[in-house]
Image (cartoon, rainbow over all chains, first blue to last red; front, side):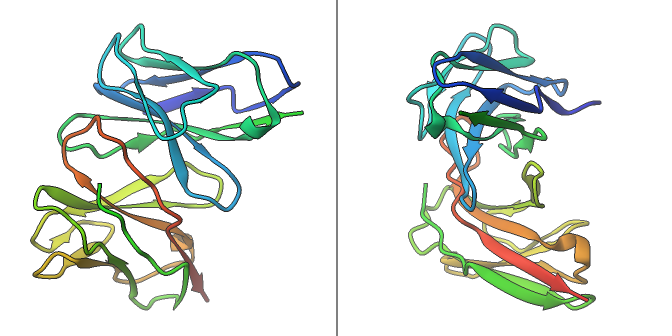
Length: 112
Length: 111
């Protein structure tokens, strides 16, 4: 099993550009999460999903959209990137019980 | 979810036990204590979780006080590869709720 994978690993955007981060998991997990981590800080939850076709807002959802069209994939979109969105983005997935989360390797995004 | 308090950093000698404390004085009866760690530049890794009883697995032991207001993660024989940020999280066991990762404890294991 590959576990949780994220693409791309690195990306540089200009302000105003858009992009989509892809998270894929092969563990048949129901729940999936997107976090961001800024230098020297802990992880902050952006959005999460409790099943295919469902999404919910986390702690810092503004400026991001998500979709969960397939159970194994969770997409994070930035419609108009801003420098404040420069961060490392982590995806995670879990079963409902217990909710021990398995994380991907991260995507390093820089917005100029 | 209950708030947790952890020391910002700790040192430990290689081969010795690392004891990482966590205070969660407002924990509710249905909330579990979870521990994760994050090695530099990698995604967080689940370590262990528990409700009331002490727990042990191949990575660590978790000691929860009788009143459940604090806990300690124990790495019995720390190695250099255990240098990481350790996060203590208190939350209900059912998924789909917001998981708050605080600043954690930065553990330095020294040779």
